[in-house]
Length: 305
Ligand SMILES: Nc1nc2c(ncn2[C@@H]2O[C@H](COP(=O)(O)OP(=O)(O)OP(=O)(O)O)[C@@H](O)[C@H]2O)c(=O)[nH]1
Image (tube, rainbow, N blue to C red; front, top):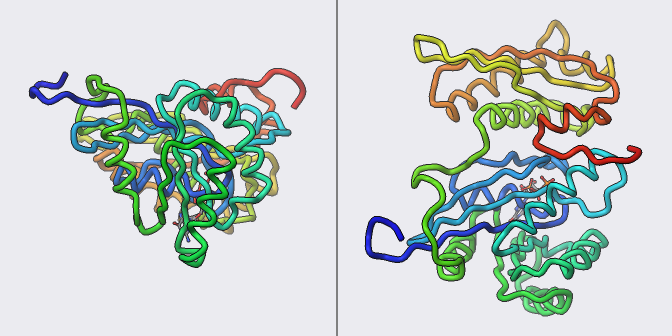
């Protein structure tokens, strides 16, 4: 019960979907702030990031998950284990499907796996701006044959169209219970993790396909200064010397530009003046190193990578 006499609702909702279905975009719309990094490159989300939304009497805690379902490499397997971990702990599972790709292979694998999860599920058809209106009902019927869903939402996460309906439904649907987080909290991702994600996003924006998705960013130090500012040191890990040169750019221009953009956003998130220092290091085979997994909040999968 909250302080008022009104009963409150609270619960965990896992968002599951194929790569690029729009999970990060949707999560940001639901929460009304930039929580999870968004990119046109697939697999930018590596760990569960929670966004917390308030809707009337309900606190809805979203778990964002990596969207990949047929893992081959070790890093991919760790991501998938993390994704399903989030789903099995949740009260409800929101299944996100790109309407234009509902019958693609990645969704077939997803629906097969979903059948094993016992939690109630609801369907979110995203990117409805990309298919003709008259096709939507037919697609809705077809997708509902592939799984068992309590209800279906049609949204365009990019513009926010339809997103409020999801929150309104969840408000009634989540179990009764006290709120688990303070009212003004929108994420429980530690700030230093969020800061690393911001730098990674700026790096992807700047370098696109020049950089493999396996490069990573870690916040090595976070020092609060007496004047209220924060000194942050981050290391960008790449796998080869050639990649290090790309990230640095001529005369260090590229890394400088990445750092400037990241600093502005980290300062917003930290609500403080930020001094950001970026380093680039080559670490061969980092994706086989258990320590790197721990830092990303993932479990190191056993067996050969
Ligand atoms: N046209 C259109 N594009 C969208 C919509 N929602 C998301 N997108 C785009 O789809 C792409 C993928 O969105 P993300 O939110 O990064 O997808 P994700 O599922 O989190 O992806 P991963 O992190 O790789 O798992 C981005 O280019 C988005 O701008 C939508 O409603 N309409």
